[in-house]
Amino acid sequence: MIHRRALLFSAMASHAAWVSGPRPGCQTNAYRVNPSNFDELLAVLDKLKAYGYRGFETGFRNVQGRFASAMETRKEIEKREMEFIGCHIFLLQYDAATLLAPADLVESIINGAPALGAHRLILSGASAGKDRAAMERKAKALNAYGRMCRQNKLKLAYHN
Image: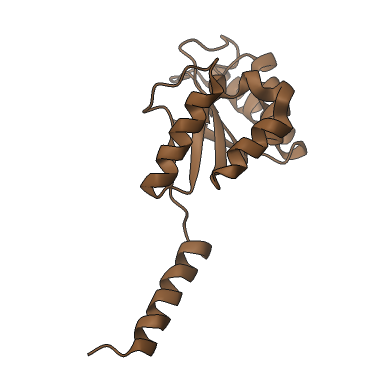
């Protein structure tokens, strides 16, 4: 037999763990989002929220066009009570020198995404294989981007 007090304390503990513990997030890349239609991204966030997710990661193309209206965009995201975990730069081709996205693109996302509420910049890149010089150039670029992220209150993550 469960007493009301035990049930209440159990519910409170579960709620506290949900609030302070790990917060599940979801990538939006499983959904078709037209980058020129921000309402489509918002509709996806509404779905994710309904599924129980508390945060999201999205591709840079889905928010890049919103940097000029950052305050309005951030308010729309915050209305959904969804943490903007990160903005991901994934390309089919990368800069030959760094094996990452072109510097001007990375810098524009570092400068724009935090105003929308993003906490992280996630970079994907091409493999350096066993080319030590290519790995060193890539590492140098990642370190530079990490410093830029820190200045803009972002954390840098490297994907794969």
